[in-house]
Image (cartoon, rainbow, N blue to C red):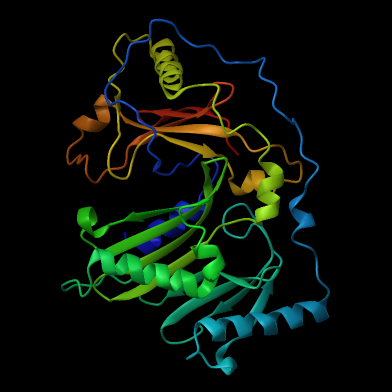
Length: 352
C-alpha cells in the first residue's frame, strides 16, 4: 500500500474505523493492574451541551450562475499552482452530492486533468485545492530512491506552501503541528508523508489536517489532501475544555476493567504501544459526521490508545514494526468508552 493510499484511507473512513495515534503523551508500555476502577463521570457538565452553529452557515448554496463563476475561479487557482496545465484541459464538474466518507460539503471536481494528474478537487467557498492525485500515485515503482526522506519532507512542505501560502505555513510551531512519516523505512515502498494538524487549546484535531504524500523513487508529490473544515466552524464547535478530566492512566484502567468484566479474565494480555507512529493521543473528535451534522454538538475530547493483544502478537507473520495496533477510544471528560475492539470482536461503538 502506498503512502498516497494510506493518506486517502486515513482521511476518508469514519464511523467505527480508527487510525494510528501520533501525539505523544507520556504513556507507559505494558499491562497495568488497577487497584480502583474509575467510574464514568456522568455528572460532567460541559460548557455547552449544544451548538447553535451549522456547517451550512459556512458552506452556502449557490445559483447556477455563481457556480459557473466559481468554476472559472477554480481554474485560475489550478493554473496558479500548476502553471503548465492548459485551461482547455480543465473541465470542472460541480458536485452537490455530500456524504460522511469523501464529500462532506459541495465541491468542484476536475478529473483527468493531464497525463500526469488524475484529479484536482476544489473547495468553492475558499477556492483552495482540497485533493490532488498524480496518475502514478497508485503505481508501485521499483528501483532506488532518488531523493532522501529529509529532502522529500522539504519538497512536500514547499508543495503545501505553494497551495496554502506563507501565512498558513508560518503557523507551524504555533497553532499548527507538523508530523512526518517515513513509510519507506518499514514498508519499503519508497513513500514518505507529512501531516499538518490544526489544533485548539494545544490539542490536535483528529481529522483536520493537510497531508502530502511523496514518492522517494519517483521524486515527486503523488497525493495531497486538505481535510480541514472551515476554521471558524471548528472554533464554534470546540467549546469544551482542552484539559482532560480523565487522565491517560485512568483511561487505561477503564479499558482494562471493561475487558476483565466482559471476558472474566485476570490477565487480558494487553500491551500498550508507545513508539514510532503509534502512541497515545489526546484529540478533538472532529470526524465528518460530527462537524457536518444537522444537529451539531460540541466536539468531544478523546483519548486514542493503541495496544496489542496476546492473540494478535502470536499470529504467524506478526511484525510489531509493520502491523498496526488496535485502538480504544475513551471520552477524556466523562470516561465513557466510545470504541472498543478485542481480538477482532467489536464490543462498543458509540462513534458515528
